[in-house]
Figure 1 (cartoon, rainbow, N blue to C red):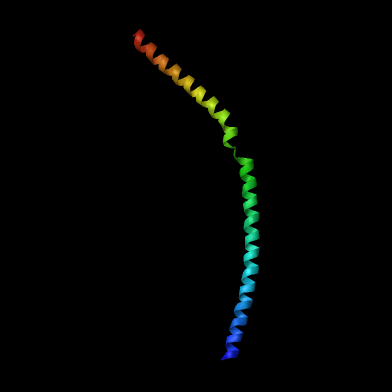
Figure 2 (figure 1 turned 90 degrees about the vertical axis):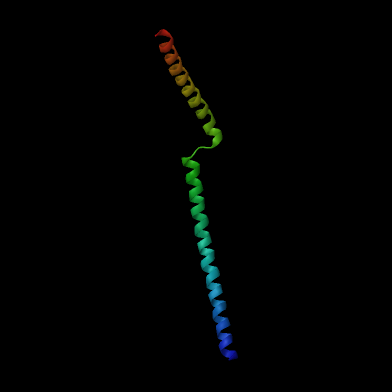
Amino acid sequence: MKNSMEIKVAKLEVEMKNFKEVNTNEHETIFKKLDCIDDKLNELFVTKTEFTPVKNVVYGLVGLVLTAVAGALVRLIIIQ
C-alpha cells in the first residue's frame, strides 16, 4: 500500500513539473503575441492627442457647411 502511494506521489510530482514547464512555455508565447499586438496597435492607430487637431478641423468644417445650409434655407424663406 505504501509503495503504491509513493508511486502515485512520484507520478504527481513529475506531472506537476511537466505542467510548470508547459505553462512557462505558454506564458512566453502569450507575452510574445501581446508584444506583437502592442506593436501593431502603435502602428495602425493614433492617440487622442494626435487626433484632436483633426477632430477640431472636421468639426469646424462641418459647422461651416451647416451654417451655410441654414443660411441658404433662411434666405429662400425670406426671399419667397
